[in-house]
Length: 113
Image (cartoon, rainbow, N blue to C red):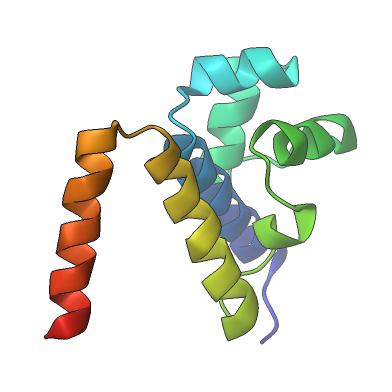
């Protein structure tokens, strides 16, 4: 599928926001780690602007996401599955032992039914 520049910026921004939230970061925290302004992160996430190459590489590094994943807009099911796994791992890493057990029980219930 071919996207317009505007669609690419919007979809890219949605990916950045998704990974930022899954990493448990605010826009301010991400901006600080990427050495840019909060406005840069906000503009990127809304699709209003596109980050410089320096910020682009920082986003990939700070969010611990291959750059390619930020541009995967769902056409490739294999990449999408890996992306979902990465996001789940990021969420799981912040859970306590008890919370992880609850998630495990929920997953067992879902897969058994």
